[in-house]
Figure 1 (cartoon, rainbow, N blue to C red):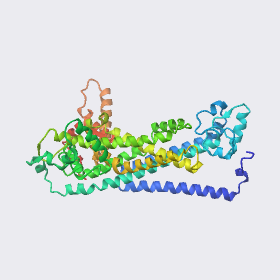
Figure 2 (tube, helix red, strand yellow):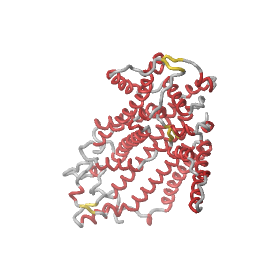
Figure 3 (cartoon, rainbow, N blue to C red):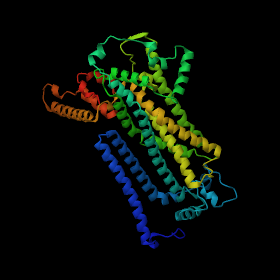
Figure 4 (cartoon, rainbow, N blue to C red):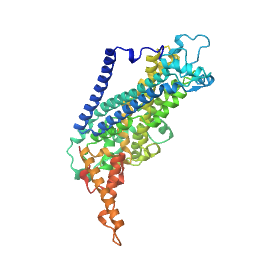
Length: 505
């Protein structure tokens, strides 16, 4: 490694020991922190948050594998040679024609440059130059790519945590509304049988959401929904009305069901899906790294993608609440009992409430990608880097990134937690942790009984099938509910004979 610096053979032992101790200590401290956090979640029966922590550990393990793979293969990748003409196409920065000073090497280039940050660059350059070619990627560029992937993953985890924390703080403000409802002296028979009439147009929920009938009113309704997400996205009448609609549809026999605790459990369950980086998100990263071509300003334009999607999702969620009000106001002048809205998957895009979670996941990752890229370029190359672009491109990107983070935390995520309960299905979080474990154990025992019964029936000769070994539709449905996170409304109707499984906590 001539000219590449001092190797371990000639490095003082105290330096090696000191650096190794610091790295190991930091790694051990992070591992202990994650371990204690997991113990805390398990002790407090916060299985959803524990699952999210496991997801974070999986992402860190993936980062470790990527790091190991890049470290082991970087010298071999640097010795892969390509033609010089091909190495000068699709560059993120234009090469200067004359000046090849040290400033040129400060840019993030995937082609071979005159300055070598590591000794392998010189070796790979000499190896390929002898063939009249250029390295596929220099070792210094591989090292920088390695750092960027790490920064991206850590930024995504941090921004997801901030989003969930701020969103949870917003949802916790709704607890006072839940307590006010639960403090009322409910009698189940009176709730179902009492004769009370409500004037629809005088109801606070209808007065705040019903804007009239007609095309002009429909357009105004969308504009109202767009503005509503910025100013008081959910008020008390919205919460209480949708709470009553959910309880009336899914747990009618338990009017004192704690809807707020259910929202928190459902949000924690969804969090472990959001915090992960799925394969299609990595495809997205590769695509935009490919399109990062000089003078295209691709990172300026993609900064608008999460903002546009977030505004569209927030407007749609607000408009679903408006649709619930219109459905009642257009059909009734007065209703018997309390005003009840009817949850339905038809209110959502493609009849899929889960699509909203997918879009929020994509928005958070894209925003993390944008802010992580700006931070990486600023630290690695400085504010004047050609990749960073002009100030007129940088400032809007930073403003959009902060706006998306705040709006998603304080408005869109709480809206998602509440409005997606207005689908035809309910989530597995409707059961508390103890009940979920009991149902899962019951379903597994039922499946084992089915397998044993079917094998016994296959070996018997001319015997009639055992009715006790027949598959239980209810056990299969409940296991599907807890495994996939949702269950159809008709599944609940089959279990109405056991109302005790829907806890009021």
